[in-house]
Length: 241
Ligand code: TMP
Ligand code: ASP
Image (cartoon, rainbow, N blue to C red; front, side, top):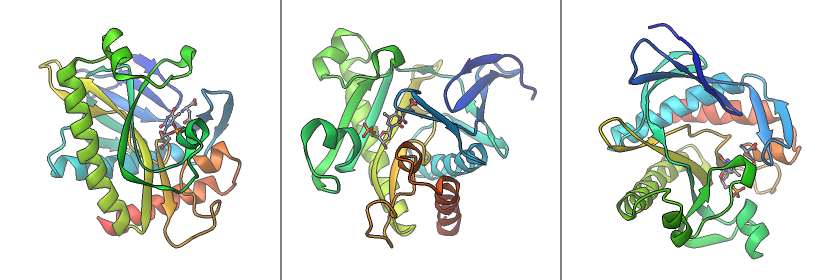
């Protein structure tokens, strides 16, 4: 299997074509961005760490019956994935109030939500990934009503599986972002990545609101020790599988 041309370069990953039109190669970069790429930097070894974490979490989800685009890990920072048409939606699941939910509602950071909240954002950098309503989502034809129900169902199932797994790692899954795609045969499957770039993860052994952060908020908020935190997540994931 050889990589051919670059199909797409995003902020954290590059997608290459392969000899097989149904398979793409994802290369995880060390580049980090935040606030719609207004803040840029590098996190040493992030590509390898996130590729390893995403590999283990995709396998965990597949083993639990969730269809994903993951095929296999072929290098420390590369995985093969099924080619899909990505929906222009960011599906965010929240268990605890943090980030934009607190900024937009005034809810206190750390408030445990009575039930998980599933939200949809329009994946569009030039518009700043705005929060969508259900009616706007349909108006813009970003998903059909059937797909929306499937997305909510999958997102909640994924949340149940990942929350239980991270709890075993002594990590609280505060919130996370998912992306989904449609395969050539029309199946809706989980795509993109799940990693400390796309989740809020709090160390259960720490109560201090800054020290407990094990995810990209360390980079967003200049909290320091970003690589150490990502590495610690990987070590706990490996020790828990
Ligand atoms: P938010 O609180 O900033 O809306 O973020 C919610 C979750 O989504 C959090 O775990 C971080 C993740 N996320 C991404 O993966 N990519 C993004 O572009 C944004 C804004 C958030
Ligand atoms: N990934 C997004 C960006 O750069 C935002 C974020 O994760 O905070 O722009």
